[in-house]
Length: 261
Image (cartoon, rainbow, N blue to C red):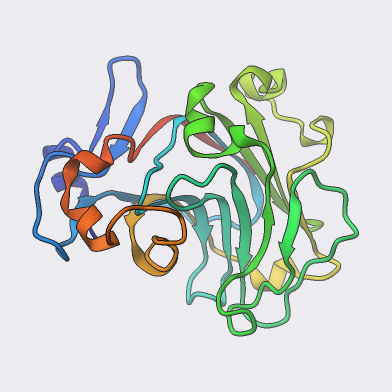
């Protein structure tokens, strides 16, 4: 239930701006009262360039959360789901931990044999075969998402996409590897990833290509709307969206995004 704004409108409405310290902020409109069922202004920003494999690092200070809020840091290829989707940081409402997910065309699965720190939740990546749940890992660390993430000043999400598959790491603010901060990242030194989808069960060269990188904040929708009541949120999702005071925490604050190829 959002109206994504153009660059010009997002800037003029103060929904996207750079702070004096260089922090980039994206936020949902948190000042306009709406009638129930109306859509709220929000921001979705995507890279102008598309990518095929690489190491992608996002240093994030603050992420959105709250009832009805559905934020994501992700990448997606053309002709979805043919080009694949990588959800690095995603969730709804005030969930306490992150969910890492791939969405693909048919023929991609994941297994429980690889060593990871998150728990494998679903194994079928194909949209058609799993009601678009994708193949997902769910973290147990409360510093990976929402209020817990913001409480410690955020951190870094890094994902490596290469011929071996796709790996994602999360590093809390106080545990970011020195090679990342020095702009010379070495994934071989980072230890066990939170999530890993191996090419042995999913040919990433066929299922993932020409990805654009995206940050967004949506409200309600297929996931947050369907789980609104079960998440313990009050009233209805549509009523929630109407009240701007509900979105004081619906914002991204980013330090940087870096791509290494």
